[in-house]
Length: 111
Image 1 (cartoon, rainbow, N blue to C red):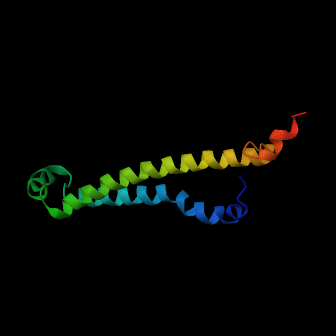
Image 2: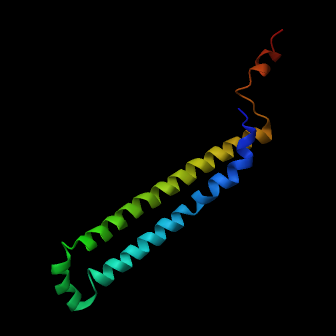
Image 3: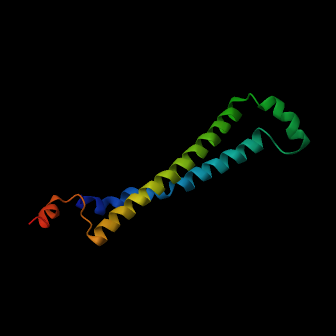
């Protein structure tokens, strides 16, 4: 099945998806740095201050941001992999003229 308008919009549609893992990794790193700085500082002082910050809503939110950025980071790589396989299949069919869905070639070999 050939969709002519898809090839014109493919670079526009898939380019932002390629930057999704970078954005989620950056968000995860920023949340981790924020958590260490405000909620669980290093050293003995950090050990004692953590008792007061464990239930802090800001620290809980930062942990939730870290968890969600990890999830969306993984999902974006899965989406990129599936999209790449679909694009490779489409390019393979276009390069080899493999028209398996074309009904006009089925009657070619009937005598």
